[in-house]
Length: 266
Image 1 (cartoon, rainbow, N blue to C red):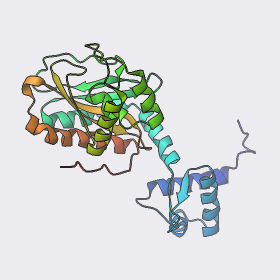
Image 2 (image 1 turned 180 degrees about the vertical axis):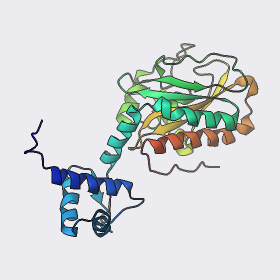
Image 3 (image 1 turned 60 degrees about the vertical axis):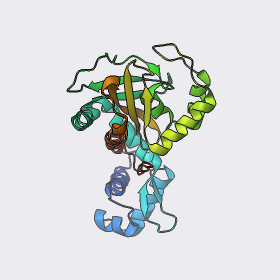
Image 4 (image 1 turned 90 degrees about the vertical axis):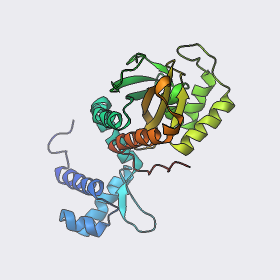
């Protein structure tokens, strides 16, 4: 730990002020605007921006020279948010999706070290389910809408490793489809923005899921509507998908994700 005489208190305070101003700006901001907002000379602001850029916290637009947070800066912010408990952040969103859809909604959380996922929270439907959801039990991500919505938005190297494992279905023990079949399905999920499944993890159910993305655009989990087979109507699938994608996008924004979702192809 540095002593008081070693810590460049003035510089640190100014660096934090510049970083805070860039992060809090509603759009890319110029050095002149920062200087006026913070009350520092423009040369000083330029020097502090250069220091932050060397640490990969801010970057200038190559055309406009206006400044913005980097992906790395957003990643650190997302880590802070996620450590404050994704389940807590998700509960109001789950309730909102259930109120709109009248179906049960699940929060799935990806476990990178295990390359599996868990259902970390559930908001029940006004109409009771005919099956039980087991929370906090690891399950494969190559099965079910909840898993494949995550798998479609993982780094290619990681998703390919998961596909190569070909984990069997967690309930029936059914063998996994070929890698080629799954690759095509994952591409379709990326295009549409949601995944759909029929009883792959929970017999007698239908699942509609959308990815929850971090600041870097990589899935950290999924939001899933689970619907008893007897209640599911095919003509309602697109409308339900919009509801669950809206909830997943809301959570993604909380985690620092800024890239707009691609509209559903109709």
